[in-house]
Image (cartoon, rainbow, N blue to C red; front, side, top):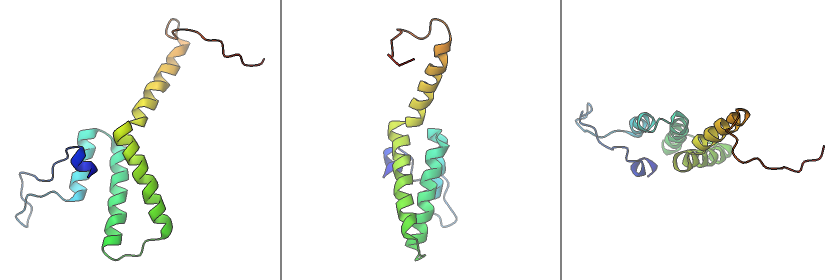
Length: 114
């Protein structure tokens, strides 16, 4: 659903050995990583894929793994849709620039005790 929303294709022009031109989930995640330029979100999605595959194929998954999956999924969604890392990096750059004369904008009194 997320990959569809991000317009990651489901098909390729090159058919696979079975004669189908469909991309599997791993291939789609790789395409997402290339297109979005967000390897962290793609790595999170790949971790979700691995756990999903294990559960689908009858492997036993620990309860904690399911909670970890939810945390990773939340992180991936926030990165993809809210771009928190991009916003954080922009804020970091702005704050580092405060040391340069004339870039701080309006000065404010914080009222902190001495």
